[in-house]
Length: 316
Image (cartoon, rainbow, N blue to C red; front, side, top):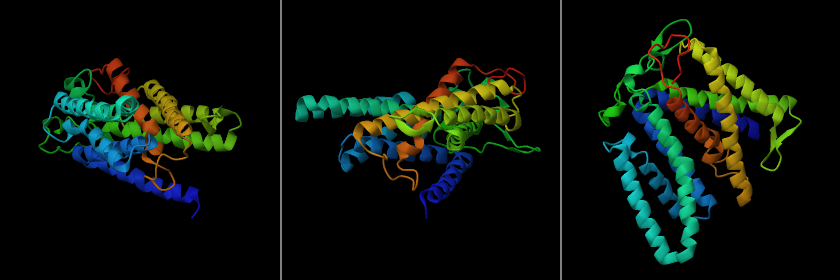
């Protein structure tokens, strides 16, 4: 089996698993995000020469930032526990490794910013009461995903823990939108780059990426964003969908290049072996991590209006 076939098959099952976790319940989404955070953090630590035991510890530590989504801890309590553990760890490293502890502390901090923070913001995005304008302004288009030809998928009640997950606080729309736009950008950039690519986007960081692929991926992802807004979310402002799709493609590519720079610095090809044909978890979710920050930031900058069907409705 060649690498392209293996990549296609594993990618198909990966997409099914992600979509299934999102649609099934808030709990399965939280578990999925914990798995992603754990393996991304594990690979981050291994890339920075940590032992397997230390890398597993960092993976579990990163999961602490997601604890408010699967327990009754508040976000501040979860962050407080994580901060206390970080202080204890840094103190131990200083006493045992001296000045060498500084590099480890830098890697820890950057890893948290790169992995834990985006996934934390992504889970906040899935909870309507944490959005900038609050639950009363939540567009119904994001509580009920409408399908072409009629029909809808209503949100299922979340588990009793924690309260913030109980329907209708769980918004599947923004969650699915992030993944679909990232996948669209990757796919269209690859196809257009393969068909028309001649000029390298950044030969040092990613020799196979081309300006033609980047532009083609951005334009086609913008078209996907417009289509999704109009058809699935019933938000009749195609320009907002186009802008979101284009920005997701641009910053998703930036996330890809960031991870490529990390690998070039360390002299490795893949971050791990998380997904056959795709490499490691960081290889697969590099664009997703940047996309999470983008969508959450836009949700704060563009407050929602009262009606999901009104022209000019902001799609968050």
